[in-house]
Length: 213
Ligand SMILES: C[S@@+](CC[C@H](N)C(=O)[O-])C[C@H]1O[C@@H](n2cnc3c(N)ncnc32)[C@H](O)[C@@H]1O
Image 1 (cartoon, helix red, strand yellow):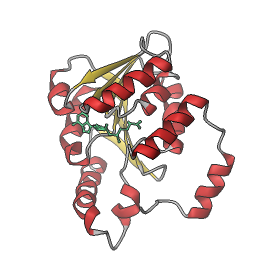
Image 2: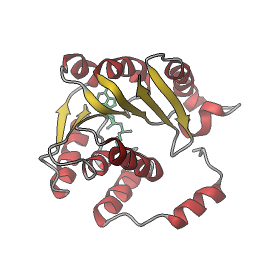
Image 3: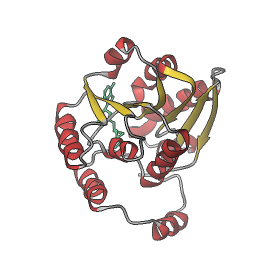
């Protein structure tokens, strides 16, 4: 799989990384072994910093997987702040629940079980920060739902917008051609949103950052 950074820069940044604690390390190794995609560690550090800067009271995550990013977000929330995280895979919900219990974050992370395409239109209260990290073919609809659920000055954080480097590549392997097309179309839609101040950052797999204006 392609990477958006040169190997040398990646190795250099990895050599500088503050080692994760035992639970995060175990989760990163588990995700790698089971081939469950989770947020790149550099993007996760950036997300934690955004949480510290923005100090959200209510956060929505779309795509929990094993709760790696949920735990990283929740650890940096203020007291009484809450993270709702949506997941449709029963297997991932079981894994996420176990990891959240081990992280002792049951009181700040709430898993909403089911398809975000059905759950989001029924949500009423708005959020200060929304992290979109679900199936790429759902991105456009989930993006519009996110816009509706985001407070003014709220932050939208979207993963995979450089799509393993393929979004900007001249040749794309056949197995990535459909998903790359979806991401390229999505990026145009994201960047042209007038209700957001947007940028796409070359962190991790490419982070779309939007602030509602
Ligand atoms: C990339 S993983 C999430 C990784 C997680 N945010 C992390 O960084 O630790 C995507 C997850 O979203 C879930 N998912 C994809 N589309 C979804 C949808 N429409 N509704 C709910 N969950 C969805 C998948 O089952 C998968 O577990």
